[in-house]
Amino acid sequence: MIEFLIFFATPGVDPVANIAGRGASPEVLAAVRHSFGFDEPFYIQYLQLMKHLLIDMDLTSYSNRSYQVLPAILKSLPVTFSVILGTVVIWLIASIVIGVVAAMNQGKLTDKVLMALGLIGISMPVFWVGEVANMVTQHKFHDSWLFSWVPPLGYVPFTEDPVGWFKCLIIPWVTGSILYVGIYGRLLRSSLIESYHEDFIRTARAKGLSETRILFRHAMRTAMIPFVSLFGLDLGALIAGSTILIEIVFGLQGFGMLTFRALQGLDLPFMMTTIMYGSFFVVASSTLVDIIYGYLDPRVRDAKSR
Image (cartoon, rainbow, N blue to C red; front, side):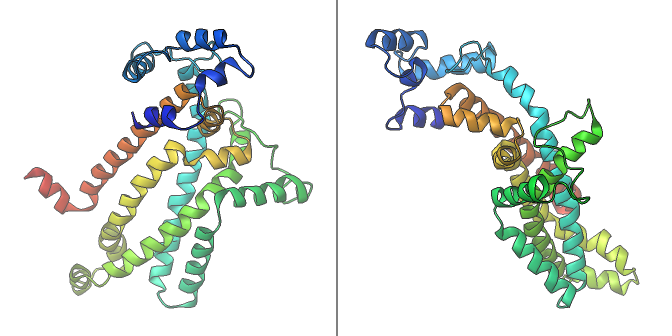
């Protein structure tokens, strides 16, 4: 609702002029305004748009009446989910390894080097990393043995060529995960160090448990609570639209690229649909976090049972 109101309240935004084109006569503007229902009150326009989106499912683009929104978004989702899948796998594995190794070597050279690398990763914008990666892999060293396997920018469906799918996405995956690896590696390190000062860790050591069992059975479960909490928020944001920069830089025709073009053309039906889509996954990721909480922290399960 807020997006809908902002769209029409923004100075200079006139969807009728964008649809009719430059130099349209007043008669054409009036016909377009009536055809799209822009002459109705705001609340009527909103209800009609939601009806076409959620009930009839025949919402069409403002710029092209034959271009339906939902089929276009469904077609783009495999690309976006492919980007998210690899990004999340690299992000989780790398950040857990870095966090654990750094915590186990607290204050040593290994710890300092890993934390410095994490800070560098946090400091580099995704679009800059992507452009540098393209310059290196697509141009400067593409003919070398190191990057000759990198295909041109674009997307290959997994069902057509799994190897090609992996090759075209590995660079975007690494690019998208660098920021998160730095943040989550540092977060897990701090949480693990804090956990090792808790009474239950001293009790576990007094019982004669091995350090490996103490780490993975006791310390990690506690340390993963803030990790999972932040992960739920970032995963929702990543699915909802943070992949836009990755898809633009690497020429991937996914949901992010579709959103970018809708914003450029002020195509309200696409914008409203992307907001609904993003909101759904933000809520879904938050629900997933609540479920995982119950596994990680028995106190949460006890509270829910009471």
